[in-house]
Length: 261
Image (cartoon, one colour):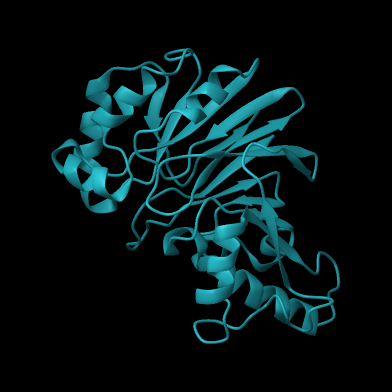
């Protein structure tokens, strides 16, 4: 399994891209920034988006992926004509009503027509595994102000956990602890410790919150834990606070990270 970090930040500033991870060139975990990070040809290889939730920083580039795919079709390219978005039914309904609604953005689930659309919305069920492009995916509910799931990814006997955006949560650690060959955890860490109240009300974690969550993780210090969703404005403070935790194999992600598992 190859994981490429396209964006790993919880805010957008010059040089800082929003959350998106590319799996094996064809699957996205969230879609905050793929059109900023990938060439048109690389974008054209994307077949699936596993969407954790519908906050704008995770869905923004669904709009522009669809637009770019439409233009490729108009120019005669019929390979990978459709992108399937896998998300909770409530999240897909939010996309239909408030995003792909022909007001905020064209409804690409009906373009060029509903029988052959640019985008398809596929409802997933929590903790029911499905297979896409040789990767088994299981959505795990986490704690956020809107319906949200992390994901367990499995390929070739190896597993990766992505918590997505979450505050204090439990079930995903039960799942992580049950994996026989877990290779990595990608985990929310959005605000510095001084902003704990903001983290609590917005369903996110601080470095102190990360440490509390990691007490639930049986492989702490053995399996790498990578932090994402940091706010760029407070990155220096958070970097120092994460380093002060002194946890082996714990670090913040960067936009040049790529992993081959």
